[in-house]
Length: 118
Image (cartoon, rainbow, N blue to C red; front, side, top):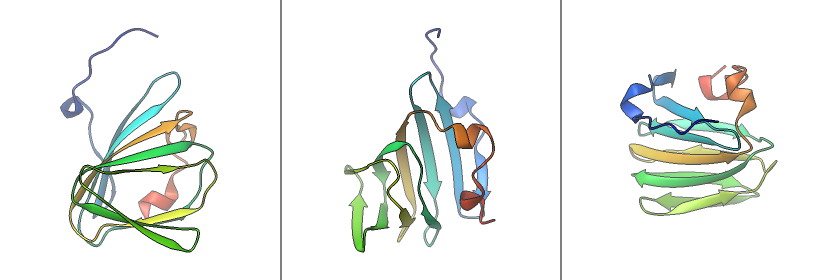
């Protein structure tokens, strides 16, 4: 894999729903995603084989998993192990940066209907 410098502005945002947009880039071993979520947006419960680290850049997200609610705010992060069912809701406008390992093959295959409200 070659070394690349990629500005976020060069990656066209995908409108997942009226309240959620996503930009992402994948390398050989991970995917880095930038989500912009409007207040009231909901990511329904789902699970994936990827380990996930979610860093909140601005705003907050409420995660629901394992019968718990965990609020993650700007400057904080949450580690989600592989195959753990989880959902999220934005109580305010939010920008989140997510790292996934291995790369999100499901996204590359457009197998992400749960994000698109389908």
